[in-house]
Length: 495
Image (cartoon, rainbow, N blue to C red; front, side, top):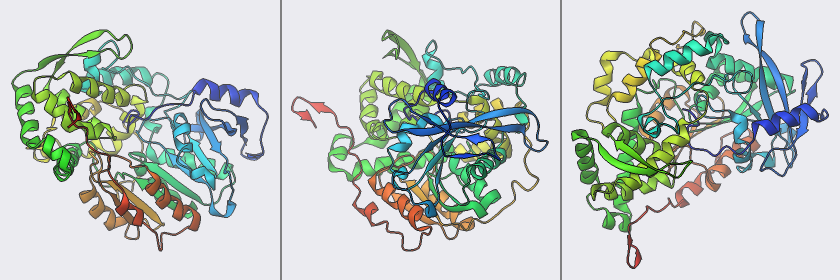
């Protein structure tokens, strides 16, 4: 999704990067034949000197003619290089998230301690090829954030504007994978390690399928499996994540004592909102002005789903439920707005449509929506809204065998959070076993979407160093302690 996954802070300035790339002298990371030159640059918030550049690819890869797209590249040089271990190519979430806007975050993970880390903006996400649209939600329409970004009229307007400048049939995951491989070759790398999270785990798998001879290892965090038909599975996955969150609250003594009837209370709020919207207020995120919100069942359900993507907001959900049950919906509306605005503002919605409409939504049949969502708190609205928005989106050009089954046998680690509302471990693990039989699967207790901590980093760095998952040490997972749940405050402090 937009900035999906999700609520990550964008700390790298595009203007700073472009200015640095344009004014500084060439560095050693270059290829005369490919025309790729990486120059020293500094990114806001990052002390170390990095290298950056632009590599042009044809928008229409099959013809190799016409418009070219300037893909921005940032290289984080290894602090203690081990060239024999290969670089790490990072793929951001979305689809629609610009990877080079997450440099500060990626650097904090420590992958660059021993490996070059290469970050490339996907076609459709960067300057010169940004498929941005006007969204229903905005700071002038806060309720639009809470209603979600999928609107058929907005999608048509987006399509009409973008196709004046771009060939929307060319913005596909296979083209992205081929761009990455072209850049890999231009940089002089043979085999690479892949680090991907959320929706881009799907892109990493397509890269492994198309260019597996250049993959050394892969680390896929909260995988989107190949049979997934987003967003048909959203209601089921969100329900699964919420049920696990409730179970985890039950097993934490303080949480259970504070919220002993959590499931019943949650159901009561849904019934109340189903009868009629609740009028509440939020503090405007820019002006600070008190702004009225009419909270519907749909808004409430989607805000719960989005808040569950990240800790600590996921572990605030029980507290917010109880506040709402007591009649105070303001804390929930404030938290929901922060979460939804973080995900739904910015990003390349046009690219999101290009990929999801043609590679996922078009495989959903309208007659199966009801059975896939019946009895689940999120309901069918999200699937139907996205299907309606995709109905008139231009078709993309995919390989003839794109939806045919295939096997992936590269050393791969799959990481799942037990409370993940987007990538349900139970179904995903079983499916992954069918086409990635050699992958090591790691389940992180109490974690939300794309769990990242010292333990998961230690697990990731092992195959990056060794080139294998044999003997992978995952014992640290058993020692992890989930974040505590937020508790009500009493006159004596937290309950």
